[in-house]
Amino acid sequence: MIEAGFAGSGQGDFQAVRAIAAAVGTGVCSLARCVESDIRAGADALKGARKPRIHVFIATSPVHRSAKLNMTKEQVLEAAVRSVRLARSLCDDIQFSCEDATRTEPDFLYQVYRAVVEVGATTLNIPDTVGYSSVREYGQLIADIQQHVVGEREDIILSAHCHNDLGLATATTLEAIRNGARQVECTVNGLGERALRRDSDEPAHP
Image (cartoon, rainbow, N blue to C red; front, side):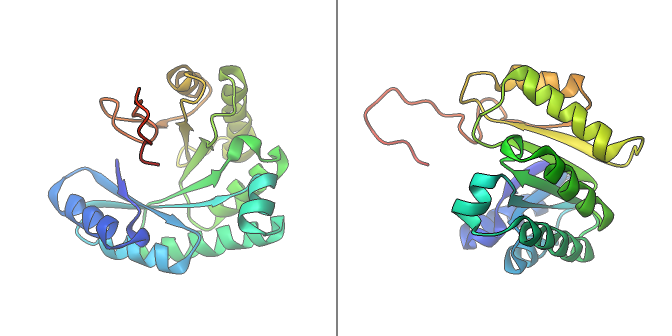
């Protein structure tokens, strides 16, 4: 699966997702916030894909809920369910992420993931958005979500999404696989988010 871009962010990403979807035979995914226009843009950009997927996400940690979204738990949960339901009406393959999952209260994390599964998400992504977790902590979180959300369901796939702030992304990803993850989000030949290290005084592109 190639996550080709964020079609709702502008014409550049929209055209990139559309072009990649038309050019390759593998699955192609577009990222989308829990915003209707993002989700519809993703669906439109993926119309030429053989295996389209929409990846819906919303921040769930206390600091992100208050400082970034200014939303309550109930509002975040409602937005997640509404958005996954819409995405599922437009595309058969839906992935969902709780942004900053590793700093989210476990019970709330389970609640959100259970709710989106009920309305059609089949891949649950667990991002360590700020590179917060140690290897063992992240592996245990994957195991806990496997136990409390997935259970015996073979149709629900857990996905690991690790950042390399502590230089442990590979080790943490491998620990996630050991604890039940069946998808990993990774760079290709070092190309991808936070993959570029520069040893100059020039500011890096965000």
